[in-house]
Image (cartoon, rainbow, N blue to C red):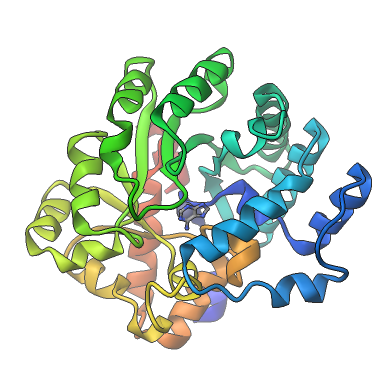
Length: 324
Ligand code: ADE
Ligand code: ZN
């Protein structure tokens, strides 16, 4: 089974590039850029990855991202992730990046996007991995800040296909970003949003009705609302579920308590993703393999989960047909 899962072609639809910063690269970039880190060794960094909730993680994640300064840093980050994809048979990926994490430190958005885009291009040419980039707004910041970020990104509009919404969910409902998402859609971008990770089912309804999202990121708390489950199944709205992330951030006590297979059996278009692989114990392969160890995952279900991701990808029908 594990060999089967490793060799199965996979697509990833929910991964934050800043969350693929492994401690080794964090130290290398800190040294290259003359930045002091609060840890002395890679082991100390990993020991700090013991999160009580989403906010605990985010505090460390934003601190880690501080080592990213130059176009080459963003290239190296993205390239390291693509090399992981190559070893795990991830043949298509749609990563997020959080521009505000960098522009707030005085880094030009063009530096960020150019480094990422150059690596994604090399990934296509040298590794055969297709990709689409998603710009994600930080929901703990204001809608005005998100508008400013969208304006700054428009000169690079051909480099990303969608906008998303991440960071601290509780207390920052999708409704707060209704107007900026409307503007993004007007500019021709697709939309997605994290909803129902720590936040209530109501936030999933808002993401659908107010932000008009094409996919829900996480969405696992939808299981608390039968009417919402019915809608997600009927409209076949993809959910980008992140099993290892949900356990590390204590959305579920353990992987054997995770509801991903129930959601799948209820007819939802569920996909498997790594979220922040450097922080949560693994990439796509580890997510599938841990699921097979701790849940009664069948081969048919694994194939269905993988197939769902290709179907939910932001690519043309022709490109999908070529990948499937
Ligand atoms: N940013 C990076 N990972 C995230 C997650 N799991 N939830 C919300 N924001 C994030
Ligand atoms: Zn996420």
